[in-house]
Length: 435
Image 1 (cartoon, one colour):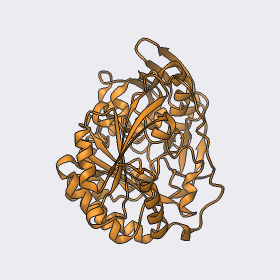
Image 2 (cartoon, one colour):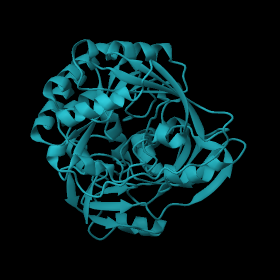
Image 3 (tube, one colour):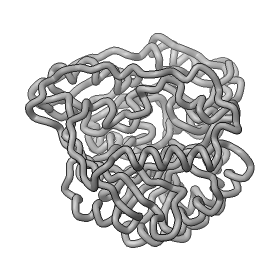
């Protein structure tokens, strides 16, 4: 079948297996012709990290196993999604410690990407709250992994993009909440400098994120809506619908251009009329604003889009981000989605993306002009000591990857130790020189 990431670029014909048992997974890996491919969960990584000629789907591994209501420790299959967890546990007063910007991601995918959220500056990544997992390695053995057991495989698998084996199940912690609503405060920032100051002043906030108008220039460059959030303690555990419109067809390429993006950005920025606004919102629009629009990836047309996310060190954040936004604004290749967040300290995982600094994520319609622009942005990111997020990547060069992820050689040694090289691979891993 035709397979792509959420960005719908690139896409290939692939053989997809949907095993229902461990023995079937083992049979797929040790098949007569030898397996060379990757595991795939919900398919919400944007680029080509979960694309290969051979794919093992974890769709049928979707059971909950155990939950400790005292500690918030949950055990479940790797195919369980964040959405599944929310549906079951929010009514009981529990919420993920860390959640990415979509709830339609599997637990296995959250581990493979070591996903982060709007609270990384305080609590780190998903895998920082991961107690243990089981993984099937290349020879079919199932190994237990934690920070103390098979530690080398643990820190390679967390953020390792599925290249060490197939995660089968996991045990991790949820946080206690009293309400399914968020107390949200929004500030209007006139430019990037003012937005960075808001991040610094509010470094202790539970959740923080900024939407950035990436087409502004001059004194207004980087004008933003800066949002803070914390779990409400009084509104109760009430559910509201997150179903919204569906995009029924691919938008024509002409519909997304610098003029339509500029108009959208103006309207979006103007929707907050005062310098500061406080309101109470359900967790869905706060954490997952785009999940309410089904098939929103069709907005970018039949050729798809790339999401470009990078991180810069804290001391280079303002200067580097300014250069990047200036180049984007000059190019006219605007992005509807331009999201800025602050990161806390890095963890020990070998290919985990976050480190202390600032990260910006942008969406661009795929074309040659944009791909050339992103190569130029890569050079700025590298010059300032940053890196590009593997989960969003669809086109980064091997050189850029290896400069941004200096532990890649250690990662390869772990893969070699557990027999993963030549067995678990993706279009991305081949492009980046990981095999």
